[in-house]
Image (cartoon, rainbow, N blue to C red; front, side, top):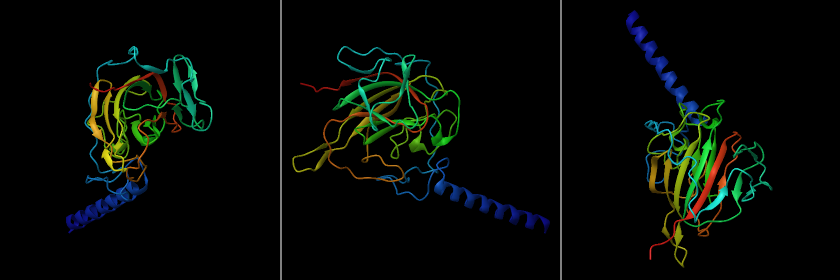
Length: 270
């Protein structure tokens, strides 16, 4: 009788625990969400906390770190000033020192003054060496293309979060193939190749935007198509936009650092 009561008690307690997790998942981004719409073409919801965590891959010590720009590249940040950038709230108000720029909390995001079509982008980032917070509260920033499509920046080193929000994710749409994050404070390299969406003369979408992402020498996405514009906790359809746009770095209230940023046109075959 004691055994039966104990088993029932354990089952009841387990049921309460599962219910509690479900409740937390509904409104706490550490676990994820259960009340968001399904991502088009997938069985997962936006920021789904039940989606499997990515397999960890330890990257090599360096890959394209401190890679000098090719001769046809536009240097967006050489460690000295923010002359190629403007702020979403006015002037680009981020701190510049020791060869890097750092997010200034409250200054707003910054974006390039120049606009770009299909491109190859190189940049390097470092999340704060002093770890504060967890999940989306650790080293959160982002590379936001045209203000529409986001490749996530986050401290994902021993930091579980919803997989479509970890470093390298096509935010809210596709997690990276693997987790190749380096430790907090270490410089990490992003090499991103982006192809813009296209529409015909009648305004019909003929090509979705796609992206190839390499983090620290590890492939995370290979010409993966965006399902549409990126939105937090939601999905959005494609809306026709210009074939060129700016590159934005996000202020998400974490002092993330960036350095060695350059970009070049993909070009066309003859």
